[in-house]
Amino acid sequence: MERLKLRHDEFKRAVQTLRDILNENFSIIVRDATIQRFEYTFETFWKYIREYLREKEGIACNSPKGCFRELFSAGLSIIDEEQTNKLLEMVDDRNMTSHTYKEEVARNLYQKIGEYCSLMEKVLSKFENM
Image (cartoon, rainbow, N blue to C red; front, side):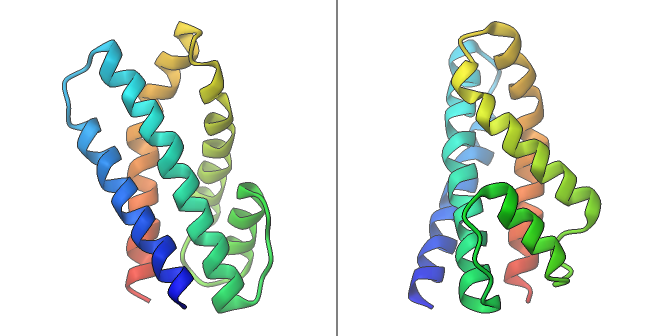
């Protein structure tokens, strides 16, 4: 249980730092920092879900996509099918962060991060209200 709480707290702090930078005025530096914060927020997010599924549901998953699919399949009413698809898309975009030296990739990714942040916050809220 302690490990789950640690993962929860890490994610909660990370998502707040992401929300904070999303409120900043746009610049290339802010864009790049936002992408960096998205990377580590995403990591804390999926690892929290992995720990929750392991500890509370007895479900083992070892990849972000696997964990999101398992979370939906578990029938916990935390995410619906549309959100699951958006989370799977988020995994693909997270994997693109190593290519943000390409201006178009960075621009496209930056435009989606606000939506991804909101989705992660909604999922967190559902976990906290269980």
